Image (cartoon, rainbow, N blue to C red; front, side, top):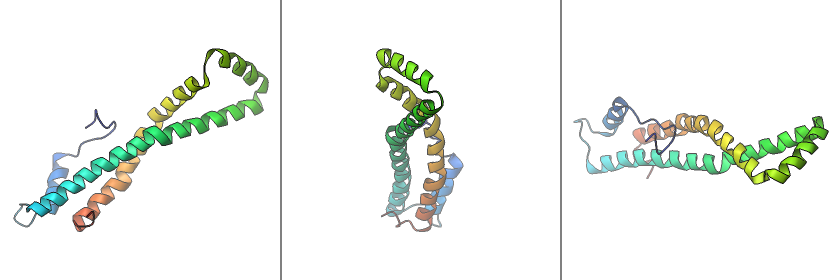
Length: 140
């Protein structure tokens, strides 16, 4: 899991056993419908995490990187205008702006996505499991 979905930690055996017990009947066995609900909850957790991580990687972090670049450029124009103009004229000849954006977006992705994904795991996915355990038909 960790190599496909960076930052993801598979649940412990104890956690899976606890979930299984919550879905299983009093005899510790699951009927087909119970197993289907159990599998749907686990698959929906994985799908939600992947969708959120994809959105963070491809949309949120690069946009935050772009906002940072715009704010940084504005800051330099106001407080270091001469230095910024000379640096900007030199860099435009040798370094394409898309390259600079790519570097900043890469830093934004590497710095922001893991903590944001962890926050999503704590806030949304645990609530989904709680709802599914108390009402297995909630996700249907």
